[in-house]
Image (cartoon, rainbow, N blue to C red; front, top):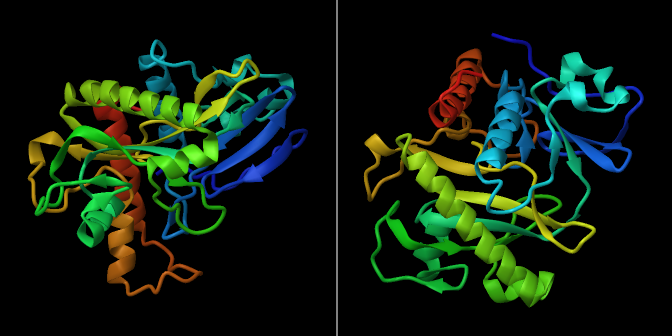
Length: 296
């Protein structure tokens, strides 16, 4: 198994944020986003890291940015370390394959979620209220049923803990009505295009989270990661069966192991066993291969 990169400390670069997965540095007028191999579950960063996870997130995002570049502008300047400033190139051995130089944006204060299937927090909301983020749905829908048309279900961005699902009117109060409507349109358009691309490869994108920011010209720009196993729920189309939970190409097996271990979800989390780490790494690489047709 390859070595993991769970934290970066890049001399000569100004670290401005360390998130659950990403380290972000200021590089002149741009930002450097580094996807580490950290993995979080239930809002706790776990140990050890997942080998090559950060490379999958970055390389897959770059692939999707290229697939969808005609639909909306994105924040990517380059993912080629050799094209980045000298201060970045000095750390090429750590950064290659897991970093993006991007434009600075004024980020929208909402998560933009598209749901094509009734699962996850949407399923829980539906069971409790019969609605998902203000969308009233027919009674007695089964788990994992396909939603047609897909729903735009925004969420707040929580500094700590879970994001909170909200309805469109609340999103409009946060961002302004015109901006919220544009974000909704783009989210559903991008989700529609991406799920068609994935379907050709035998993959269902059940739902996804996108982020947008506003550039200096006032234009809405696609940012962060897109259509990765950390931001989307991927299913094998050949195994899909309505009315039951689906096997996902993501960290679900980690959550399952933590639940079986009896962890109370308070830090610190138990150390992940080698076999869970290896299976999770293989799962991330497999969805990358299925979507792109390439090995990492």
